Image 1 (cartoon, one colour):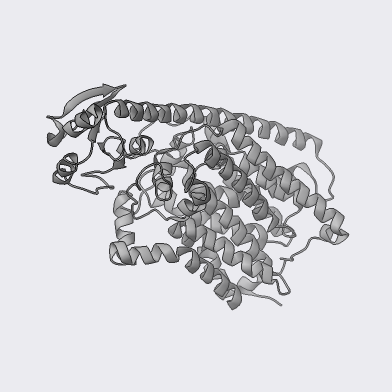
Image 2 (image 1 turned 90 degrees about the vertical axis):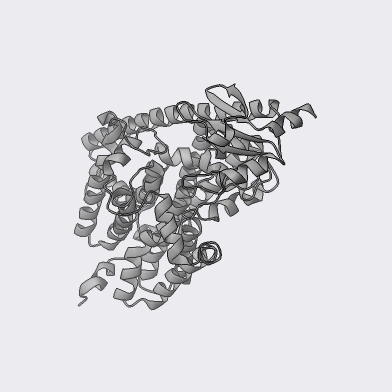
Length: 498
């Protein structure tokens, strides 16, 4: 008889009976998963588009390895994994379109590989449904081709948790152990703190079930992925605790902050809700967000009745711990923060939906099938509407940055140059300049340092609407580019004259 935590895994078997039918079934299942991943890539290219310019955070990550502009300030919470991920393209090309296509193809490929790790734990139609549910969220599609870490943490979580469950099955599975390490390393490479939150239930389950090799693979993967971040913590910040403390300061002070309502406000397409004072979206936009945990709970109930509790329970537990810090420990919101939780919840949700449309004997329930199909169609319509609006708005912002950069060039602010002030980081990237700040989380210089730099190279201060011009720039030449007031140091006049 099996007692305690070990009992969770008694129903875990690496292969479903259908898989025993032979290579034909496996090939068909692989083709189904590949079709979902391929559609995900195609949807990114069609609905987001390769022409979308780089966003604020993207310019920071790309500038670390690219040649278009000097490296931007790299704050304590960030990790260099996503910069290294895009280095094969960004290190030699300044084409944003090429970068978008590269990331769309790569994210589709990794989604396919991540779903394959769950073969034998769920039927292929459940895996395909889970992949489709996750891939059609507006936030997944929007960030698929972007230089941001959160989607890659989500894909790493799928790989790690799926391989963890396979390794817990009867019989040795060395490939699953390697998969646990690889998934953990991918997560930690992108965001070490997120990786620990995702892996927390696994770090408890492995020793509780006396699977020490599995624990070793998980810890080794986390350590390998986070190694560079930890080393940099000692080199730049004086230690790991100091970097974590600085990261907390940059994010406004981590502590008890109920950000659930902030996350709900961001679902309408606000890529960053800080401060989050906007009104709540229409209930139609929020409906899927409330349905997600309910359907995941239904998937767990179905699995418990079928004697396969661990399969939905473990990803559900990891989804909860992944979401916890962004719902309760941080004072602002961004929808991309919850991507790892959405990816893991998609599995029990897809299982629950299949249960709703098919009875225990495998027969279809026509009425339920029609209702579920209508609900999914409405859901897809809402996701597309939010995605379309988000792409339009962000495209307009990035076109504005490009125009500001072009205007600065006309004023003589050309590389090598320095920009300070409002939105200096993204505009500096577009202009090929360095950026600096005298206050805020990205403080890198002083007013005296800016004045000294202005004696050597062109320097400009950007003043947004309603913001005061600092004392050191009040005597500089004042210009206007769109809605931005630009103060240009005299050095730029001499540069323009040449």
